[in-house]
Image (cartoon, rainbow, N blue to C red):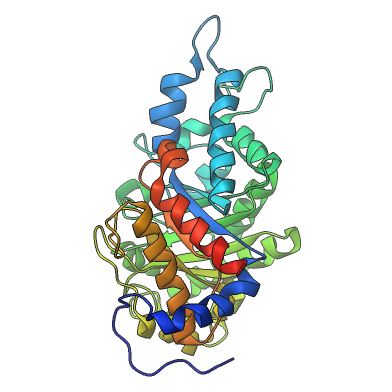
Length: 350
């Protein structure tokens, strides 16, 4: 590997003379992979499925024809945008035992709803989660569970009672539902609350989960926000040998509600801690202005160029980037995502 660059500071976009080199650096990786897309499952299920796809008589069920039509457009649009993985984001990060029994952590948590076996999809006998996962795989898209996020507070706190048992129960749950990977999105004060379980218990949970998932070909991923991972309470997870025994990937949310925080120095800190560059994934948010006007096609192109420039500056090939969008039902018309994916595909084929 080429050594990392000196200096830092937020990226302002690549210089013209570096674009070809940056694209060449990314070509080999991007030909083999795409992007990941996060969707708020509460919005997807609560705002669309429950409103547009329910049959209430003679018994409650989800209309399979209507749901199929929607999911076909959703997944074909993701594939067209270059996304080969969808992460179903929930606020719940707390009660693994309740999760394994098909229960939510709180009444306000939509994860409870998608386990409703009395809301089967058509005559399939499958609840929404199982049907969604099966449909994704048929469409050539991996499906992940993502727990946590900014809303992971109160009843959704991550409390470990029996770390090894809870890890094995989660692995069994993922096997049962044919979930490919699991992502723990630990943001803000949630990192402090998680580590309040004790570093040894937290490491036991993640290392046990990693050991249980590896033989199944499934992965455990850690997502952290800007400045909140290695520089915060989660630092013990990046001690020598710990990260590799617990996780298969690290996703960096280098953005705020409306700000771009992409900074080579922040990525370098994780590389210096021994995180393999191919396991580091950089996140992009379609509401942040990366240089082309937030949410526009030009902004998606600008974001892709920033990713390519980051790889060039670091002298490494990073893992596939990921995208967060507030409106999963708007993916088919999302100009940012379309342009972002196309720009990366263009770079891979030049």
